[in-house]
Length: 450
Image: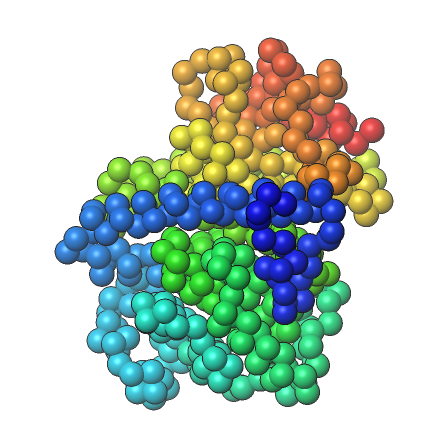
């Protein structure tokens, strides 16, 4: 493979394999080359941030860690805004500087604060390991879990009985095998592959596959993935509960079957998005002061409400045609801002259209095409929705192939523009049609559910 290490060699001693043959190896190294490219730009972004932050570095780190804690909780269905976490961390700042045992003891009588700050403090411990170039041993993983889930009765201990993963058919490791498999994971993680993004994907997938704890497995997995990345000067892996959730769960399901590539690819995509956002001029200042958020937030909230209404109509129309619309996610505010800036790093999955259990079409968010921009003039560049059709191409990383053209029945692009009487624009090649939300949903379903 032109001097490149074999994918199987990189993944030795893990539960994951890359199939033999040029197609499988080619898919893997396509993602690996993008991971290396992100690494180069990540270091440049890290240097820029360090220069911008100067005397406000602690405030910037507070904002970033608050985002990580908030999104990790939201992926588990726990609502806690970044601002709430940030305000609490500021108020209890002196407690976060305590040694871990004292921190837990001091807050034991205040479960609400303890639960909110436990994960925040755990990210601090991971940062300390990263700065000293350490990775946790098996017993340290249990100690870390006690911080992540401080109000859980079994915090810091492996499960004593079988557990399940909600929405998954995968059966996790039985309790009597957990300690041995966690020791294997920790030993492997200590050495790694030399590719920080691949290490992050493997340790995340492996831990959730074992599912060693009664609760908190996902939060632990994302914490360890970020540890691997921070050590290599990558930005944090900020998986968004809105825009990434559907693709993330799909990728984890694939990893339970031994295929690490979809999760590896999702991590690369997420990091590209974060790096692109962090590279913006004045990013640190805007992050701290929320200036960017204040202007983008109103547009995002209004547009997000319209897209939700559109999906609800799609769901209803699909059901009448014996199809099913399955929501995958919406762009979060930073994805939305990237799409407004015409950056593909804000792309994310929207919905799958299923027929008899099989997902035949994927609707996904991307930035407005040049053709649509020309047709609509100088109006605000709201994100667009595009189509992906199921493909059997063995060279494809994902099972859906993007369709940017129109077949005369199916539109090429959908644009949702809040504040208009007919807010949905469908584009066929060089013709457009403005419709009500229900009308547009009906045309979309009729065009693909044939």
